[in-house]
Every structure is written in structure tokens, then in C-alpha cells.
Image 1 (cartoon, rainbow, N blue to C red):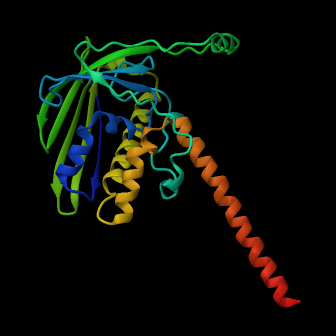
Image 2: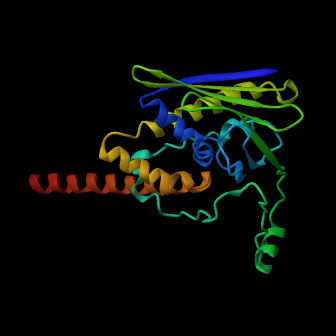
Image 3: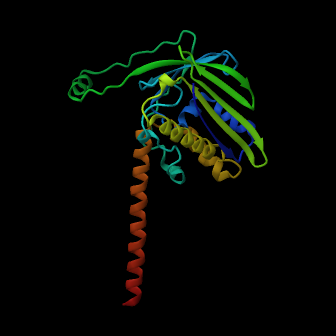
Amino acid sequence: MQKVSDWIDIEAPCHEVFDALIDIERRMQLSPIWGLSQLLAISPNFPETGSSYRVRVLTDAPFGIAGGTSQAAQSAFEGLAQLMALKMGSSVSSTGPQPIDGAQDRPVPVTETESSSAELLPKKSVVEAEQEYVVSDYQPPHRFSYYLAADCKTIITWKFQSIPRGTRVNYEEVFCPENTGGEDFLPTVRHVIHEWLVNIKGYNELRGTRGRLFLKKLLDRFYLKLRPDQRRTVLLILFMQGFALVTFVIAAIGLAIAGALI
């Protein structure tokens, strides 16, 4: 078995960090590879031991978070100070994950125009696979573990330790050697885990002051729900607007100085 692990210190109480990561959708949204998977269903008794949830993964790698490439690792906190305009461009589905018992996937109707346009686009080799994860250990607020229900189980364990300045979060993922890819596989997985922990730290440390709580509310309601491409589009628009504002201020100062010298 192969094992990858990492840890990070967070300036927040242990129970708050634990509660944030127990939320499956929030945990997935904070991942740097958010967008490569979709939450399908959650069992009614989650997160109790023996409960489960299902996800659809847009990759051919059957393991916890490993998959994609290092280019897919995008921080969920880029441009955090510019969150005032994050509602722009949001097109998040209003349908949340359904209970796992009797859950069904409903096809999305496609118009004739959309179908014709799709035929003109190049075909992409994307593998969709449904995976079920089963909770194997639930000890709030200190430990949470789950595994991929497959022939060779991938086991993911989160450990939460109280420290003087907050909480130390340990992440551990154990998977079969046959699930590993080429020589870049393990470095990529370690990079993704580290970025994930950094995002979790940034999110949980938005506490205390009104400003930080307001930013966290904006993250929850708008930004984290956006797809990665939507996040990048919003940040690009905000960057362009900020650049235009700085240019205007510099020009105004220049005109004021020129007027004073005349």
C-alpha cells in the first residue's frame, strides 16, 4: 500500500474545523481539484459510522483526491479581498445532493441547436465514474475516516488535534500501488493535498471580526459554489476593473500635478 500524508496548523477551535470538514460539499469545494467531481447522494444517517455518499468523478483514476494534473490545482482563495463582486457570473444549479436511497440521475434536455453545435466541437476523452465512500470512523471532533468501496480500498483519514493556537489537521491517504500513475503521480498528489490544506486553513481562519465573517459568508453563498472556470472569469474581470481604477487614479493625480505647475 502507498501512503501520502500532510498536516497544517489552523488558528480556529477544533470543533469548528471538524464541523467544516464534515460537510462533504464544503470539503469538496475547498479542494484545488474542485470541478473534477460531483456530489450525487448522501445517506440519511451521514456522518455516522457505516453511512456513505456517492460522487461522480471526471477522471480515470479510482482513488480519493488524486487525479488530474498539477495544472488543475487552483487555489480557492485567489482574490479573496475582491469578493464583493463574486455574485457576477454565478450559474450554480439549485438542485442539491439527494438522499442516497432511491437517488436517480435525471437527464438534462438538449435542444436541437445545442446538439448540432456539440457535433462540431472536438471530442474529449473524459471518463465518468461513480464512486461510493463509506464512513469507517467518526469520533467528533478528533477523527474522521472513510474509504472508497472498491476491490482495493482507498482509505482517507482526517485527524484533528487541539494545540495552543488552534487546531492541527492531519490528512492521510492510503491507496493500492496499482492505483498510482507515472513518476509525477505522487508529487502531484502531495501538491494537491498541500493546496487543499492551505484552502481549509484560509477558510476556517475567517472568524472573529465582522469583516472576516462577511468574507466567509460571501464564500459560502457565492464563490465556493462557482465552477473553477467561473472563478477564474470573475477574478479576471475584477483584475481588469482594478487595473482600470488604478490607471484612472494615476491619470487624475498626473493632471492635478500638471495643473498646479502651470
